Length: 139
Image 1 (tube, one colour):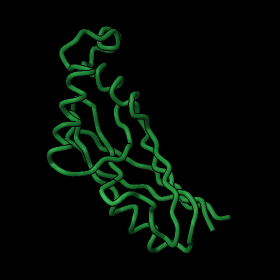
Image 2 (tube, helix red, strand yellow):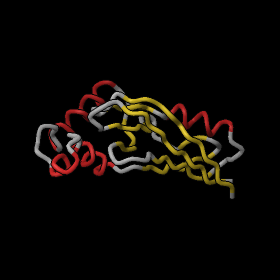
Image 3 (spheres, rainbow, N blue to C red):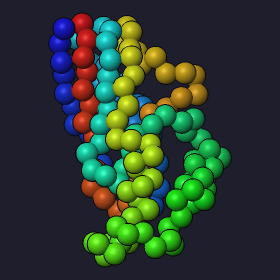
């Protein structure tokens, strides 16, 4: 069993910026000498999350609209009183989805559905430099 690690770095726009990282994950698997196993994606920080969606404009808008309804920006959050940074809603949104995702792979291919992509969602209230840790466990 081998363990491999990669780090993906990129800039985000914040405010529910949704970034498709599936192509990058596919590229990593294609060059690794691991045929099958699991790939874990983890984003450090408490204002971003990782999940899967069908990455198309309509659904991207629907996801953003959903979070505006269930965790609105303009509400008074106790976190904002503590830190004064105005991003309490960002922390709650990220906590709902979580910071990691694990996907099995076979023959160096992720076992995602036809319309399923792996995405990072940056919920913070400002642009950020993000790092995503990718760990591959397989043989």
